[in-house]
Length: 556
Image 1: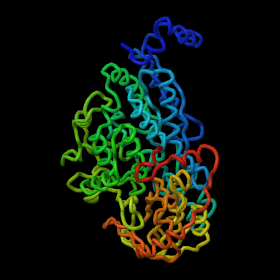
Image 2: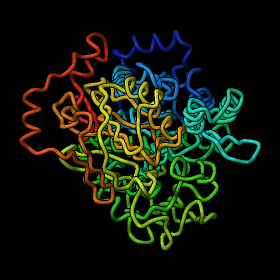
Image 3: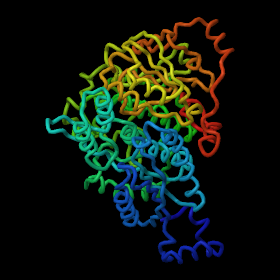
Image 4: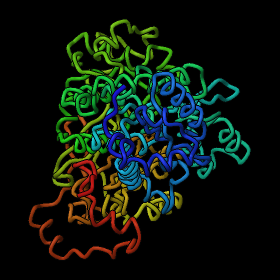
């Protein structure tokens, strides 16, 4: 099979120095004359979604070898959002997305690799690797590690990571004792894999299928199964076909492919973080996605799959019901999916889903009988979010879809948590957490701590939470994030004071504060921002370069 990039470093007299280095590692001349395929393995012993990725990498290598390539494995970092949650460590996960993208680019370009197999699993690693694929535009395929199984209590109730987060809130409210809390901790994450709900990791792994960059069932086939290992071997085989046919990521990740991904996102109420990641991937592909694209898709897309935290089903249920191919098959019945888009299988989306079928109509509703006519996410605008804000509408209690209440303002997540635990939040309040945006945080911390504590204390139907930070895919309730412009960029959220009345109308797509333009301008004139929280290191550089959440928080 002909090579592309690697001939520059491996062939001829000038390539003798490279060959010398490869001889020193034990490679034969025959291996050097085959295409060099980078296997990007984000395995580590810290993140449950990544602990078993060596098995995936080994199977990928087997597939590459079977198909005439030489696999060259190298690492990528991976941060566990769950472990980073609730402290300064949460400033790093979103920022790590750019590090992952940059490091994959650096390795692939420095060593002139011919193709890439990308092995992520969790929240920021999936989009980071897809961004690298789009930027490099050499043949690439993504194979994830797969979701973990849901946990189970003795009474049959299913659990996931969000269960233990909400249990902490219940424990602090005196609703659970120590033993009960620990019992939920033991059962919530019963094994390795990405957390079992439609949180950010699984949302992005599913959308990888919709984009065409992953094999069918990449998003739902469980971790540590024979099916997942077979899929990894197939990924190793398919990358050689992609190289042979010169089918590249930008041939696959087209405008229509991104619209497919957004449509699937709405149909399954994916994480609000997808509204950060899809525009960032599109940016690297030379395309532009904007917040209105998501709201337009939500308006036309029925909500078919109600997965935790929006419902009681989990990823294994979605897989057994037919997975993303079945969801896309249902959507295609009303022309909501562009079926002619190419994919890493070598076939089109239409060919990939031709034989898909729904086997459980409660997990994946027929398109004629959806959970509701609109999609799971909503984009809000108003004088409090002139550039937009995001909420998972499907996870909001009906009584909180429209809400007006007094603001209780905090300049950090930590201050808000202290107040919530101190029972200083009253029914009807609107908690405002600011200076947690991409620049202000820096790093746009997730707010699963506050939202799960509120839910665990039984206040999720009484209290709203607004932030220029973001939320975990596991968050539920009237949790409105990504408020843009952020506080540090002079957004209206920086001007809010305790007691200001905030009006939330999610069905009406509105978010505003009851202040006149004159009052807002007077406050803006008097505004003094707090000192930057981080002044050295990577996060300081990140804060200087990062753009607004409504543009995907990309670096410029």
